[in-house]
Image (cartoon, rainbow, N blue to C red; front, side, top):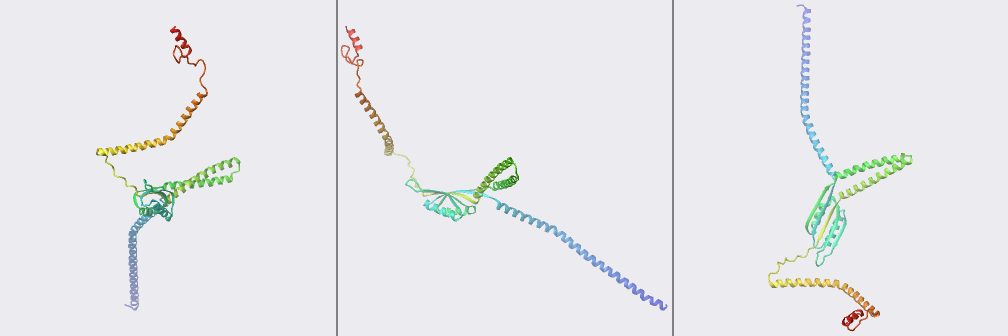
Length: 330
C-alpha cells in the first residue's frame, strides 16, 4: 500500500464519523421535537377536555346569577297596596287613641280620621282611627297596637298593583311624547285654523296627561303609605243572666205587674205627648161654641113664618098646621 492510499483512509473515516454524528444529531432533534409536539398535543387535548366542563359550569353559574338578579329586580319593582283593620278592647279608649296617633307619627305616617265617644251608663267608650303608615312599618305597627289591649280581630290585605302602575307609566310616557310633538307642531303652524286645531288637540292631551299623572300619584301614595283602621272599645257592661221565665203564680203575678207598669208608663208618655194638642183643640172648640152663642144672642130669630101658634092644634104648631087641625075638628 502506498503512502497516498494511507493518507486517504483517515479522511474517509473522519467523513464517515462526521456523517454519523450529523445523522445522530438529526434523529435526536426529531425525537425531541416529536416529544415536545406530543406533549403540546396532550396538553391541548386536556385543555379541550376541561374547557367544556368549565364553560358548562360557568354558564350554569351565570344563569343562576342572572335569574337571581332578575328576581331581585322584579321584587324591587313590585308595588303592593296594603290595607288592614284591627279591633282591640282596651281599658281607656281615649288614652289608647292618643297612643295610636303617637305611633303613626313616630313611624313617619299620619292620621286621616279620628272619632271618639265617651263612656256612658249604658254604653262603653269607643274610638275609631284611620292611620297611614309606611308600607315597611305595617308589621311593627300591628305589633305595637297589640300591646294596647286584647286584640279581638285583625284583617290585613295586600293587593299587587304592579301591572296597573306600569300601564299608567307607559300611558304617561306616550302622552308626554304626544304633547311634545303637538307643541312642536303648534310652534311651526302658520294659519289660524291650524293653530286653533293644534291648540285644541294640545289641550285635550294635556288634560288627559294630568289626569293620568294624578292617578299615578294616588297609586304611589297608596303604595308608599298603607291604610290601617283601628277600632278601640272600652270594657263593656256585663249582660245580666238570661231570665228563665216565671215558674209559679207569684212569679207570673210579678211579671204581669211589671208589664202593667211598663204599659202604664207608655200610656202616660203618650198622654204627655198628646196633652198639648188636646188643650189646643179644646181651646179652639170652646172659642167656636162661644162665638156661635154670642151670634145667636145678637141675632134672635123673628117673623110670622117662625112663630109658634098654640091652640087647638096643640102647642108648637105653625099657623097652617093649626088651621088644618081646626078644620078637621069642626
